[in-house]
Length: 133
Image 1 (cartoon, rainbow, N blue to C red):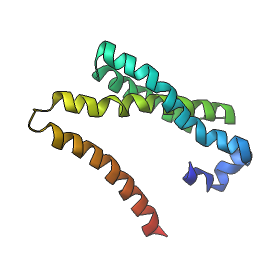
Image 2: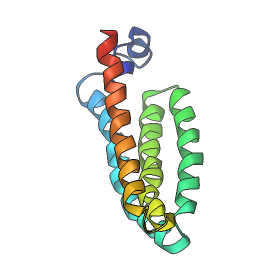
Image 3: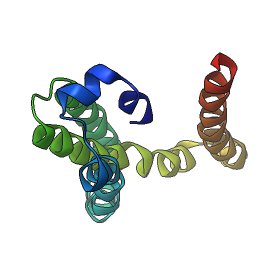
Image 4: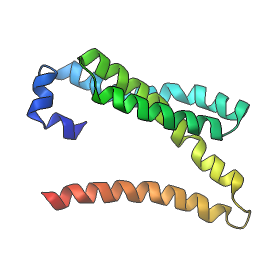
């Protein structure tokens, strides 16, 4: 979102959002993630870990496209909320599935690698930003 907010075209298209509207555009994503925790845990326990991951893949791609094609501020906010909701379907069951499928002697290392790659991708993305300045 910070990258989008720097684009003059984006700001003009959505009417120079400020204050509470800009806050809603940013905060609706983690609110969707929080609400999904209650759903994804039930789905994971009831039908297994793979189903929510597949659902997350399909719906995240769909709602990312919907967010990119949004014609109004309202549809953009709704798409971000739904995108946040379904990213939890990817992030919550993934380490559990890795732990369940890993050979017992490899379990700790593979789970640590999953978390390490997640954190290192954040560092690498932030590193790219600082290098381009």
